[in-house]
Length: 414
Ligand SMILES: *Cc1c(COP(=O)(O)O)cnc(C)c1O
Image 1 (tube, rainbow, N blue to C red):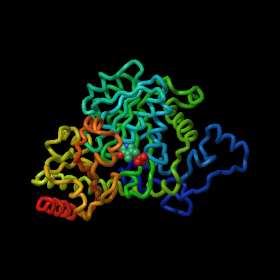
Image 2: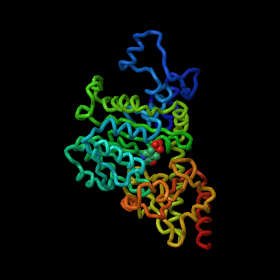
Image 3: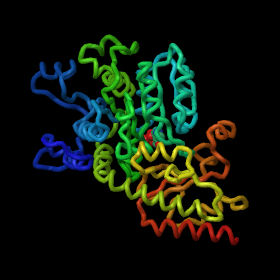
């Protein structure tokens, strides 16, 4: 088969498998059990032969989605979960043990930060550093460091991690390097290219893309040498070493912890993924136009968007993401304009949490998603009290600009 591009691969992936009746989508397999005519065959599948037993460990529908994600991320293997947080929980709790040290970002997603608190209670040491500076990561390495975990772009501060620099450090020190690619998706960046050992995606965001299904995934890029990793259990060392890490996550994480992706959600995410590149190109161009408009508006004090030349990591973002700067933007209004009053005046933009939808979303970040964190941690993350977080959608550009212009003008005159 000739080598094809990103979207062609997604569109024709199911059809190239064994789909009944010429269907172009993998069907939604709802069966929780899989029966065998031959008991020896059943035993063989339990002992590692490919096949299905009980749906908690996967179905033909989740497998079809995993194949697509694997093509998108240029991975060795991929595994799906019921949510992005389930993927992260499985990753950290199966690859790390009490006494291990994890290095991550001080700007990390709020729920991941909260999960880190749980890991610390279980005896895992965690150091949070500024990931825009690879030296900060290097300085935090200790003899018990096993893993470095970072996001591509921070939410809502939009700091862009030095993904290449961190990749080199992890390679030198033989550390598992995990990149949360949720905000960029494989269309803007394949973290394998910056040396990531594992890639995590919340499928609930760009890949599903329509805010109608939750899911998460992990991809092993094949770059890490699992024979050097001390935490793989002997029982998972029977097959080729390249698969050890993922096998342990699949057995100890997915099978034992049980956060399996439902087949209907897998189907909806797979259909959403067909238009990932189209949606994201439109989202990025809308966001760039909106960032430019807002940064020139007298009622706006500050816009954080990696596409703007004054963004501290603008050049890095341009290189890493191919001059596409994501959907995420932070906006601070001029003194005297109440962000709640402003938000209430928006008509097209929806007041809701979530990111990566087809619709444009806005919320007051400090008072919602970062409320539980408290003022001290918020200050450390650079989240101002009046910060508005935007996730830009695919509406017509002029409708978005008009909506913001009208809301800002009516705040300025009232
Ligand atoms: C949303 C999100 C997650 C968690 O994904 P869910 O599917 O909502 O559980 C993890 N990391 C980042 C960067 C996210 O934006």
